[in-house]
Image (cartoon, rainbow, N blue to C red; front, top):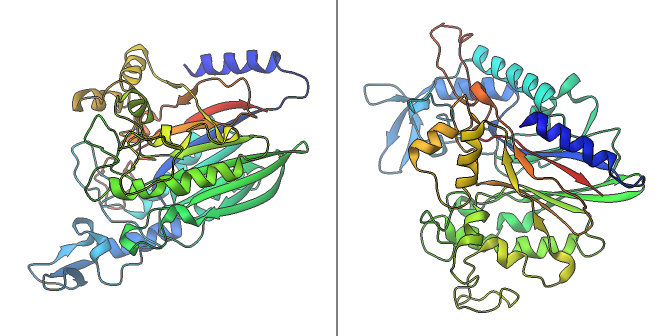
Length: 413
């Protein structure tokens, strides 16, 4: 599949107008990725023992028979836990879903494997990363420690941040903006998802805008109890993100439509497009204002409702970098949820390798982007699993480089 992708890219380049520019863009959720210094502090905190204060519903540092190491505690309920710096402790799990006690040597090895993978298998001009703790964590895994790249990062907010990196030789930064409205700042802190990130680049005198998102999780598919207009803890928050996301897109596409929207949408849009439910819960037009009685059932059809016309974007078709059986599973996943055995097979090392292989990450292009090829979910193979190892120093640990596979696309503008 990768050779096919390269061959088609060559054909695309040969067939372009002399004034056109072809770029490779990538989106990748790196799964709570940290730089080494932050990871070492996190490991120290997770190695400590904590005792639960049931009355206050918090965990406090302590010892005794009822204490537990941080690896088995909801770290966000540990008193004083800095959610702007550190993820939960149980991030890495083996194939049996047992928690891996991360050690410094194991995490250092993960960084080396991630860096090697990016250098060999992700030769993108623009890379949009989600679930990273900051710019330094991305510099550490790019070729030459990121010296050939420039960055548009999110700072502040919670630990799951975004960074867009691009090759310096590509063009100059016009702007790097955080779309705070997507974080729903008026909600209580526990119900505030992540903001959006917008990069404008001047490439050969033409402005290209790259929008990266990481929307609210756990409201994945209308075919899998993910009713966007329903109740629960998660879908109502994603519902609140619909209006600010649409407003953001309409604002940045108002001129020439040279816009790319990509990231972890945490929503299977292929299922939405196949769901017979009306776009709005009251059967009204998706172009009408949002009201309590007119909620969204289909995020993709509501946002791209054709009004205004300039805001219309197209979702790229998606292929998978795997064998024939894996490709069939990828195609099947667009029509129905995969069952547990199918998901396990697709996420196994001989297929895509990542546990969240398909259905969450998408790429959209505006009207000013031409001749797109399908986006590709690229395999990470054995690097998608974690192994605890047996050496005391953790040098034989294998920590997953992500639970997502990178999504790669060629665009021409």
